[in-house]
Length: 312
Image 1 (cartoon, rainbow, N blue to C red):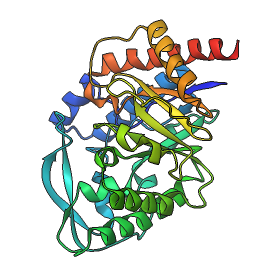
Image 2: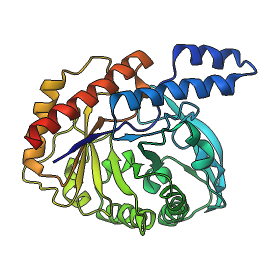
Image 3: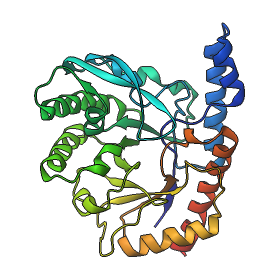
Image 4: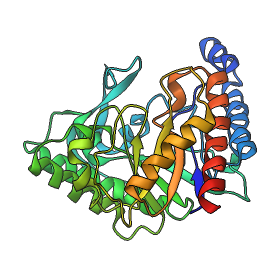
């Protein structure tokens, strides 16, 4: 089994960029681009399987999608008890897709030509859970309209990206059969007909009680926070791939690649996924840039160690 690796979500800004955002100089956009280029170059240097825009100019993962018709900018709210905030989407009318949003908020010209690309997309169920709904009488209708809009996004993204990471922290807390079926239906709408790989990333919660159900979800694989959760015994992934979130994005402590590789190997032997990627358990924006850079190099080393052992 070949072992790949990638990072996802928002990457931390450098100290120089943080200082520039406080001063807001006329060339701020160019400073953002230079900082993005350094983060992309690091991914290439580390040999990541998929390279992505580090999203340094995204204030939060939902902010660009406030451009959807029917959605306005709401109040600031803490994201999943983390030490960061997001601007809550305020739903004031029926949600509709008008034009590509994600592509307009990426710097595709900075991504390397000779490397496969990946991109992040919010899960419609999570998007709805994090929104302030002032229009829909039925929560289900909101989720499904968001799914239709995000399906349009996925359709445009598949022409540029080999992997779409769908971020779904809210799904971790689902315990109702009806809500689980709703999340499934919404995700099926997003991924239907998509040629790119789709990985559903679950973090900021424990999906273990519903993990057996998630193995039937319409995606290529699951991204799991192996730093904070344990996979229940007896589960087999079968055709489902695993993105092992074994590099801690919430702690500056540096991983020991050999030890982490051994721990992931035990998980892989138990669940037998169809393929394996090594990644952080969530966005690296929660640690300073210097630590994030070191963690990127470590996850590459972990993937290399695992690949050598599993191919041998």
